[in-house]
Image (cartoon, rainbow, N blue to C red; front, side, top):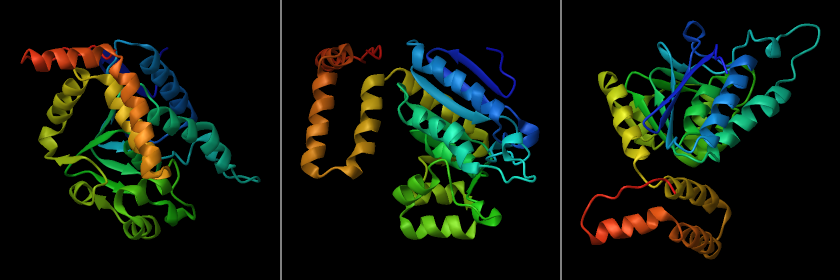
Length: 263
């Protein structure tokens, strides 16, 4: 597929997906969503890929929905924003949350609205210290979408989530790290190198175990402790039959670094 709105490439087990509408702060359009779906299908099917990094071109990560996109046009009939959510954003977030590889968001600038939620849907978020997160929906009479009302309370608690959503204040990356919203905020000059190092590390780790960790933790809030113990047992049973477990034990016994294959 020829991409017009994103960049996509793979190397050494790392897939890199870059939102590429820098003149529009990488805001979403229907065309961009179609390309995102195609790229994520490649990640899901290509077994040589061990980690996905999502970033934004230019000075922004993603400013959310492009309000000038035809899907959002306001004329004699108001746009069906709910349909846009169901058609594009819901499958995007669910795909990321179920992806067969770990995911990293590299936030280099503003991450607003759906752009913030896109980052939060990734397993690990590393942001430049100059970057910030913004829930601007209240300024146009809407609510946080793309999972914003789910991610925010779970990460920072209800009081802070409501404050961010209702007041639409910018949340600097360093405070986002302090609040537990993201994994790490780093100096701007170190952002690319930090993400490269992390991606290379993840690409050498036991992929299935990392994804199972994500799935187990996401399931936990809906379970009692007894139920979650059974969930853990199920994952441990399945992973215990995998080659990576055998390799990990052998490497430990032989006092050497393991060579995981993701199987």
